[in-house]
Length: 112
View 1 (spheres, helix red, strand yellow):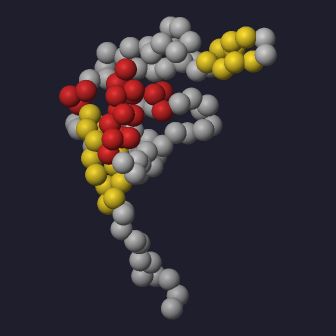
View 2 (cartoon, rainbow, N blue to C red):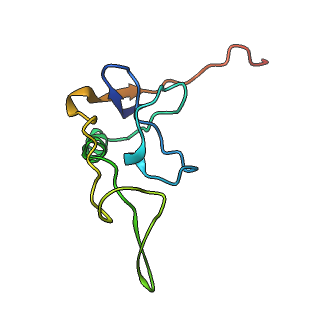
View 3 (cartoon, rainbow, N blue to C red):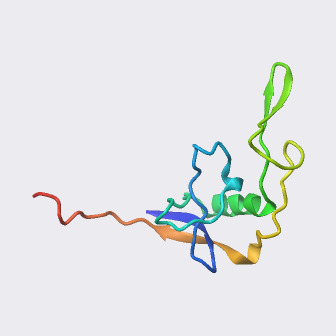
């Protein structure tokens, strides 16, 4: 099965799957070693490219609406409610979208 992931060229680290315990979106994530955190996988190359484009723009703020008007999450720092916080360290030339093929794993130690 073929998937796509976003890899940092120099380190070989991948943008990880979101850690929902942090309560922040994918733009808050930095490349991590794939053995430490599973990479974020996409079924279409275009989806991975779109995610990379947003990640390169910087951390985005979360805006929610209540009956009383806008509510801004306090755990996120930055500019306006939906303005990215530009991260100059996020250089497009250091990142790439790569194809990943998942192969079935055979447990040779399993009882027969």
